[in-house]
Length: 371
Image (cartoon, rainbow, N blue to C red):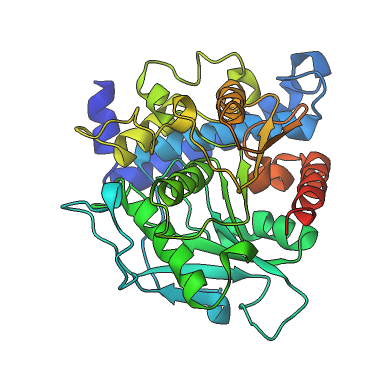
């Protein structure tokens, strides 16, 4: 019965009615949550403020019902509020889509990206490099545009001397956009920067959550095809989703020791991995679940950030340890005490502004020594 209801509410007008009902029910529950969370000993973590506890509870509901109705952004490569900061990026005519990218069904397409804080200009000598950032969202939501990435991109531009290009890669909630579509788009954007005359020594790849997974896949692709694409200067990996395959098992989030202190829900991550890597694709493979597949990326220092209280914490630590054991790799880990998943994207909204600023400052100091 539950599966039938879940199938029905993914289509209009039932989707709209479900969203309206959930919104009304949530509004009715807000006063109860507020008063329940007033005593600090009843909060998800004793160090959290009332606002932090309240917002995590609210985002859990949002995450759960987004996955139930399969809500995702409409794919478009035309600018909205981004205006002149939007750039359309056609697929490269060069022979750069090899190996896992040479798919019989999924082909490279034109994509788009948003520049931060302004459109890239070689005449502007104040900024020394470009950060190519891949947004999070379990490969099924998000678009890297102003409404999605403004906070995270603002952190990057405020604490580095770089432009940021937020790529709107294909998300798997749209038809025909499973793996390797997103990785094809990442390679397309990376080659575009090179074609603009930006040297690889001035490019930093970055990603949060699923976007960090994509950044890792791009690094693996570059290293596995020597001479095809030059290596970037460094990589910033924020709360990397390094083991999506585990989310196919029962209760991947609710069975986690940090479930209470995070907003990510079972249905959301399962939707993500099953859309991104549907059968017969092997979700345990190195390009999709890199945790158990360390590789050499000598010459590209990695900065891994995670929240102490997020559900991905243990997986990220395991991935970092594995990468450190590979000769030549340089891996630095930054743990944010008391933080949930992806404060890079949601820190200000969730009430973790101070932790977000400290995290960004640490990243800025680290990257300054690399560029």
